[in-house]
Length: 211
Image 1 (cartoon, rainbow, N blue to C red):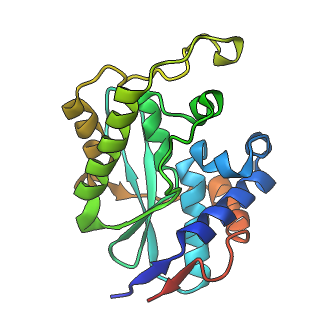
Image 2: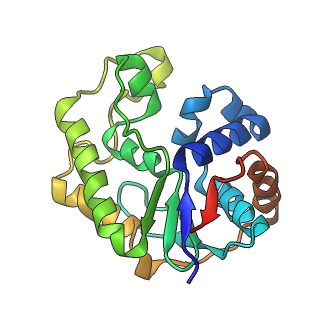
């Protein structure tokens, strides 16, 4: 069984640079904020091609959890070796309780977790779900939506579909997203695949290596 070591800081930096170089919309954001808004399929394709170029076993999984907060959500994750999952776009789900980059900017406070990229074994998904729930609930309980301004486009900054949900509902939402048993194998579309190849070139050597 191939095990891997992931330098999450190096990986995040490479993905952020690639997003800015290849996506005009993402280039408008400060580099450090780009993974807050990135598409999971693109970042996963980039990680997949980076691993393939280094002969590391890798495949993609897709979750289709049908959750109330986002009924048509599809979340793509790369799996390195047999069991190591990398999630570079998990922060999007904290938006369900209102924690988004715009809230951080308007409030002038650091509110996102330090981790930009999550790396965990399939057996650790329960821990990830518990941790995400804790982050979401702590934000929800200690922060209020900000006064509406023009740049909010009619939606108060700090609101979200799970803003008033119970802890159990928030936990269940994350558990459904990360239910490995319900995920299926996924293959990138041609356009995402080509973009992933280009984006993988921005990830520095040594970001993912065999243990």
